[in-house]
Amino acid sequence: MSAPTKVRLGIGAGPSRDGLDTATLVDGCEARGIDSLWFPDRIAAPSPEPLIALGWAAGRTRTLKLGTGVVVLPGRNPAIVAAQLASLAALAPRRILPVFGLRPAGAAERTAYPVAGPRAEVFEEALTVVRRLLTEESVTFHGRFTTLEDAVVEPRPARPLDLWLGGLVPAALRRVGRLGDGWLASFVTPVEAGAARTTIAAAASEAHREVEDDHYGTNLLVLPPGVPDEEADRALAATARRRPELDPHDLVADGWDEARRRVERFVDEGITKFVVRPAVAPDTWAGFLDGFAEHLVPLEAQLSDSPAPG
Image 1 (cartoon, one colour):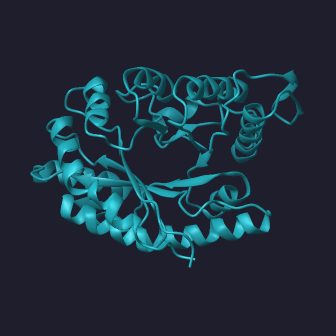
Image 2 (tube, rainbow, N blue to C red):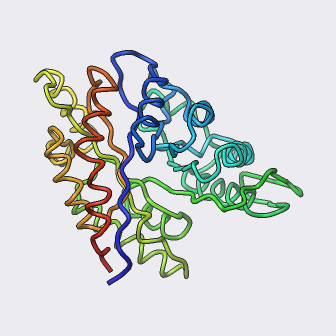
């Protein structure tokens, strides 16, 4: 049996009836003492670019942790990404949580991230470059897609940033074990997440490294109470398109009570970090945050007393 679990629940920026009402969301999370807020990489949707959003939100807050959920890495200049993260970490120490993904979720955005070779190879090389620039005084790198000569990023973070990865297919899970510091899943069931955790840990062991026990997380979609049936049906249909082999009800929690039960099942499988997103635009962000703070935030203390699997 390993050390006690450290459960943390944050909010994922999602659809809003007020459009880009980011200020209400950021200020509301900070005021309620919510652990973290995560911004998606959706350039074809009415949401701010995630790295810009992190900087803007960091300037409005003092305690709120800020993450990308997830930012597409292939197609971006990895040296610039490293410089952006270094600056964010300097301006908001211990509050920046980068998570990287392989490709955009939406087809409308995929041509916006062109790469010069196989996307997985570009991703792994770019991730290596980002990590080295964030941890080494000077980097000379001659890869297939990136060349650097005595490259320097300053100020380098005093404490190395944990670089988390997304993905669910076996190759992506093994990549987390080989190269990542944590895993943030999407559209997974608790049982799938537990199996993925085992795969990641095995790959890390084979690479003579370790992913910490509390560095396994997932996004969790929640239908807020009182959502009209037609809106709920559209959200479930959209989820079914992402995972057509599953019942969408297994991926979307219907109300806060079901969300609590879902979190508990994930924790039983060794998943301890949660990004809770509204499956449909809530009537107000304030109402959604109040429900989250009342029904889910208490789980952080309750479930953190449980021993982690292992």
